[in-house]
Each structure stands twice: as structure tokens, then as C-alpha cells.
Image (tube, rainbow, N blue to C red; front, side, top):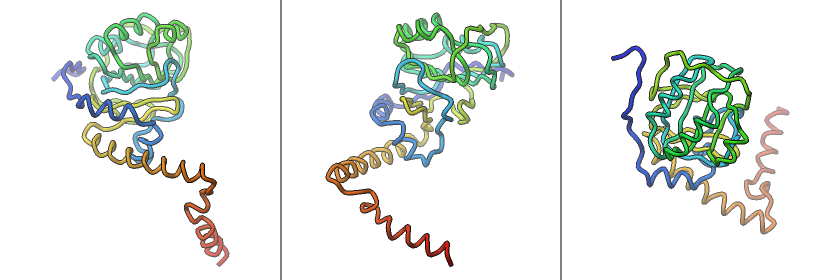
Length: 225
């Protein structure tokens, strides 16, 4: 095994599973996982408003994007490129030209724990990018890294093939081996919220729905004992 892995072949989820998760709000998926596997709030939609697809991962030293380009080359149609930037806040690891290549390959989007540039051009292209922000300062292309290994992005561990779902609330990671269970739980939450939404629209308060007066009184008495 090479010290620096560049893995071309990874296990990917069934397309129907990815499509089903793509129809569910990130908030509901996060609820289904009890807030686990949810990236921190610094990872935000900078271009586009929705991504969903299997993760093709890259980890790169601070200030260098050679491994990012290697991952882009390895990625397949429908993948979300996920980049662990090792915490460097000062250089852009993505821009218009990389977005053009990714768009032409049919990638579903990019999630980068770092910064990008050329954001106006990326938005015009319509390529979804989730990252921490922008800077005009470009990174180098001269360091080793790894492709399709376990990485950390937004404080969350991602394995190649895990399903990445992002919308304007943020990004969640659905572990591949748990994806069907997460989908089932998230769909139950969607169904429950639809019932709740209708009851609130009919004028019933959430205090009444959840019997919160009784809960509040119980907590008050416990506190005053």
C-alpha cells in the first residue's frame, strides 16, 4: 500500500437511495441522526442551494490543491467532492476552472472545509459549492495528499461513498452503511411534521400539542424542592 493513497474505486450507494434522500430537508435528516454527522455552521451554500450524492474525498495539506485536482479527476458523475483542507483559512482551493471541469463531468457539487474564489463565475455556471467563504489568494499545486480516504470536513468524519446532503440550512453526512435506516427515520419525521403543521395551521399551539404546561410545572416543582 502506498503511503499516500489515491483510490479510484469506491463503494457507492444505490441511485434510488440517493434520490430519495435528495427529496428530504437537511434539517429532517439531521433530526433522524440526533444531530450527529452534521457539519458545523461555518459550511454554507455559496453557490446553488441543494446537493446530494456519494462522497468522493480528498485530504490536502494547508495551502495546496494538487490532491483536490486528483480527486476531481477520480470523481464520477453524481459524486459530491468533499475536501479536508486541514484548517487553512487563507487560500482558495477551488475556483471557476475547477468548477467548469466538475460541471462537465456531472458532479453533484463540492463541500470544502476552506475557501474558494471566482464565486460570481461559479454561480453563473450553476455549480453547487458549500464552503467557509471566499478569498482571491490562490493555493499552490505542489504537495502530496490522499484521495478517497476517510476525511474530516466541518467537524464531521466522512468516508468515501457516504451520502452528502446539503441545502440552505447546511450539510449532513449519511453513513453509507446506515443510509436506509436514516432514510426511514427521516421520512417518519417528515410525516410527523406534516401532521404538526396542519394542527398549528388549525390554531392548536405546540404547548397544547405536547402538553408542555404539565411538563413546565413538573420542572418548576423539581427546581423548587
